[in-house]
Amino acid sequence: MIRTRFAPSPTGYMHIGNLRTALYEYLIAKSKGGKFILRIEDTDQERYVEGAVDIIYKTLELSGIKHDEGPDVGGDYGPYVQSERKNDYLKYALELIEKGEAYYCFCTKERLDSLKESTEGGDVAKYDRHCLFLSKEEIEENLKNGVSYVIRQKIKEGKTTFHDEVYGSITVDNSDMEDQILIKSDGYPTYNFANVIDDHLMAITHVVRGAEYLSSTPKYNLLYEAFGWEIPTYVHLPAVMKDQHNKLSKRNGDASFQDLIEKGFLPEAIINYIALLGWAPSENREIFTIDELIEAFDLKGLSKSPAIFDPVKLTWMNGEYIKAMDKDKFYSLAEDELKSCVKRQDIDLKKLCGYVQSRIGTIKEIGSKVDFVDNLPEYEPSLYVHKKMKTTEESSLEALKKVTPVLEGLNKWTNDSLYNAMLSLISEMGIKNGQMFWPVRTALSGEPTSPCGASELAELLGKEDSLARIKKGIELLENALS
Ligand code: GLU
Image 1 (cartoon, rainbow, N blue to C red):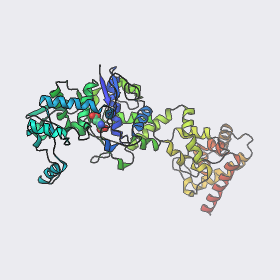
Image 2 (image 1 turned 90 degrees about the vertical axis):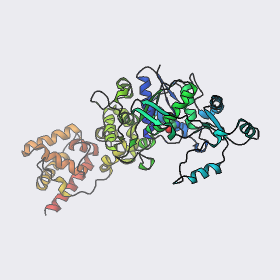
Image 3 (image 1 turned 90 degrees about the horizontal axis):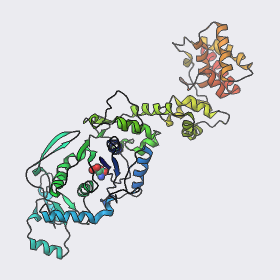
Image 4 (image 1 turned 45 degrees about the vertical axis):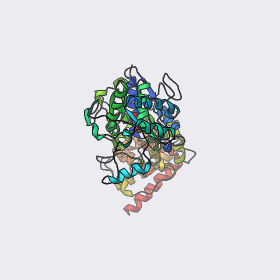
């Protein structure tokens, strides 16, 4: 059975790239009837962030990515929080020492720092294996005296080759690798060690993660080999980019799931969008629910070229989800935003909401669409001139003057009656529809675009306000033409 895992470190921040990793892991497992596991990788105690684990749960829940096993739901191989398994890892490190595949290192921080200084540039210096050559007696003496130690992996000579589903075959010279630390001086395993032990213990078949881990993978493979364990299938994913040259980073403001939610994007649209960031379905289609993604997903569709995060495309996709949404559901989602933008009590907000629904990319765009309701904006008379509608300032003035008494005399102020009244006036005047509807729409909204047409706007604003706005339009045009 396929078993994948999402192994986030609780940083308090769910980067879009990480969420995409979780999604692909979920899809790989679910498309083949497998299991998707959540494991919290928190052995770096210095980086502990309060509340960070909750952000992980919340993000997955909102995204519809349900884990089968994990700290909160249990499962066959728990616990799934690495800090709770501290002692398990030591046992495995000791086994490697037994096998001659790892060794105690008692080097002090000062000694290690001096190694760095002695290399050119003074940054990364490979550990010089000083402690690999300690005698048995020296080691025992140190341990007995409680000298602080770490345990290091002994990288063997030669080359390591592995296969990645996205990047193909990769070979590295082992001499390029350092004898990495497996157990730190605080007794906790390093991320690199715990990761391998857990992937094995939890019977993970497919390891999916960011391509930044490609360079560590040969070290992991040497560990698998040292233990005599089976190496999992690797799927490394290219970074999500802001543009051709820069990764999408925290500084960009919309790099995390939380940022996007705050900007008014829907979780299902975010998931749909990020699914396509680096994966192409075999059919030419873009809108997928998460269940449809499970159906369509295939590892072969993954690409190794970096995916560029395009907020415009995401906004478009979000708009498609909004359009397709049940009207009542959309209203409950939009209600707060609408109420914060429209303070007038006499407005049928549900109706207004219905008009707006097909015209926005995110909920946050509602404001700009409905601002005119409370306050008619200042506008230029040139707004009345529309080439396609065949309107001029003169024709608009004429239309507004003629329509005023007709509307004043209307008993029923409904969209239908308003529309029909304007329609008869149009035929009476022998003008084109647009030559009436455009000026009325303009006078009522004061905007170049509005969420609905002239009669709908008039119905929404009510008789008194509509007539007052039309009067203002007449004055504006008269002044312009005098
Ligand atoms: N804990 C690692 C991270 O958050 C996960 C790497 C992996 O999936 O192996 O980046």
